[in-house]
Image (cartoon, rainbow, N blue to C red; front, side):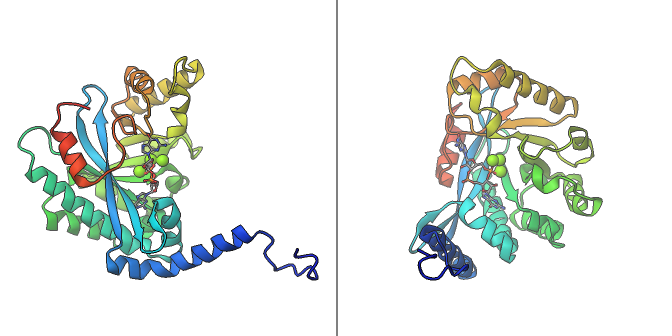
Length: 284
Ligand code: C2E
Ligand code: MG
Ligand code: MG
Ligand code: MG
């Protein structure tokens, strides 16, 4: 159709693409007001000890309750927030809210180790000079010990990171905050590089465990995961697996020595009450 109208090179050929661009633009401009109006909320997905099935914490996953579009997932707006810089105040809000929630769980928990809270950090937050100060302030205000917080940074955000980028993470790690390398295995990072990163947890990406959902499990997949787990453990890193959807996967991954797991097999992300209830159960 573009051609028939004289071949204007700038006419969009794909109306859907056009619509997506409009939507993207609309969402981007709506972000700051959405934060002020309190349209964001957090779901919590349990992290489970593979050994005994007990809940040991949760990952905070942000959602946007958009007045017209309904509930939007982070993949639909985090990249936009990163692009405009809104990720800094949004990320600060997520941290504050998740830490407050973790304190709330702790106050209602009379036995067992304190529940831990995992919060995702985007590359723009890493580069923001206030990261360490803000994080310490949030922990102090809420009264949460730094050891109960784990910040997740994707492997791709740290590839080729120079000392300047690693310094705030190093400072946080020295304060006792755990740093996890998220989506590990998708970023083609140099394994030897792991040694120089201030991380204590490796989160193995879902793509590695997809092939283990049903028996028979691909022996090559098993070998790869086995290798990563043994490398991680030799570097004194704990291994968390994401996206565990079946019992077959859970059994295999436990046998391979993974420490903690997260996935629909155990629980979907849900409201804070779900986590509280599951943490009181013996095991899930
Ligand atoms: P992620 O940190 O790797 O989080 C895990 C994602 O896998 C979540 O998607 C979760 O809902 C999904 N998931 C969990 N278990 C399963 C499973 O068994 N099967 C499958 N197929 N998926 C599973 P979600 O909530 O859509 O989040 C997507 C990504 O958005 C996150 O990936 C994270 O990188 C980012 N994100 C979420 N919340 C925040 C935030 O507060 N700040 C920043 N900067 N990024 C965030
Ligand atoms: Mg994560
Ligand atoms: Mg992940
Ligand atoms: Mg992931």
